[in-house]
Amino acid sequence: MNECIFCKIVSGEMDATIVYKDEQVTAFRDIHPVAPTHILVVPNRHLASTNEVTEQDEQLLGHMLAVVKPIAEQEGIAESGYRLIINTGPDANQVVYHLHLHIIGGQHMRHPMG
Ligand code: 5GP
Ligand code: ZN
Image (cartoon, rainbow, N blue to C red; front, side, top):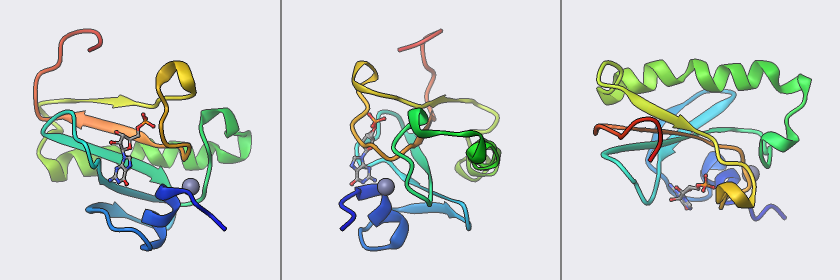
């Protein structure tokens, strides 16, 4: 039985505000946004983290980045800017072990991090 919450969001078993979906990825609003726009892009197929990525996943990972622009345009942050973050493992505070790309924008962020 799959207990992964992001797999459940992908399958529709669990609610989320989905902003983009295709055959490879799903994007939805983070439940605890840290900025006015905070979206998570996840592969529809379960991958725990970048530590599970293999050469077979290269097209999928490229696609995760390729969908960012249309999502950012839809959210009205393509021009103002946004930050992309992937957390992997305990030192990065990865909480959900289903690979996800954070798109964070809608407010100015200090440079280079934080
Ligand atoms: P991580 O630290 O693993 O990179 O981030 C996990 C993110 O998932 C957090 O920003 C958290 O707010 C978000 N999140 C956790 N559970 C849920 C949920 O059930 N629904 C949604 N939409 N986001 C979630
Ligand atoms: Zn999963």
